[in-house]
Image 1 (cartoon, rainbow, N blue to C red):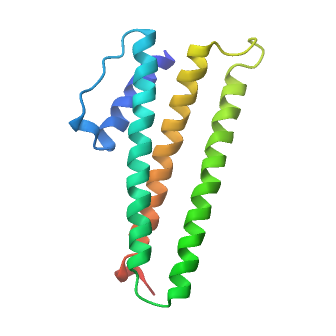
Image 2: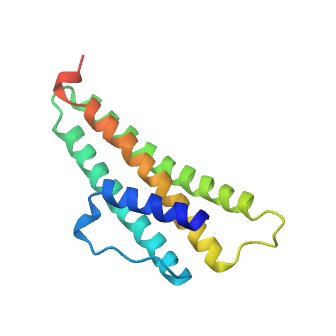
Length: 142
């Protein structure tokens, strides 16, 4: 059941991330699911990196006090580094919770759960960065 839900989530993320130019992977076997989950995370991570790069570019191009833009850039870079730690901790906690009392996850379950979690959290972070990017338009500056 959870794998079917994941397949639906993968398709939704695939369509939202602009990944339509890549050939979709059929996810019918366990190995396909592992490949799909890894591919979906790579796509989400690539999209996040593109948004992050655009955000840093927008900050660099901002007019105003250079000390303010420099401080903003430092803050955004540090927030992103902190977010990576939160992502890894969150996904680690989910793996621990999902497999508590089971003697630990199999390697396949571990990889699938980790990729699924990282995809979901990374997609959410992309939305956060898009919001910040949009907030830094000249029209929104007060």
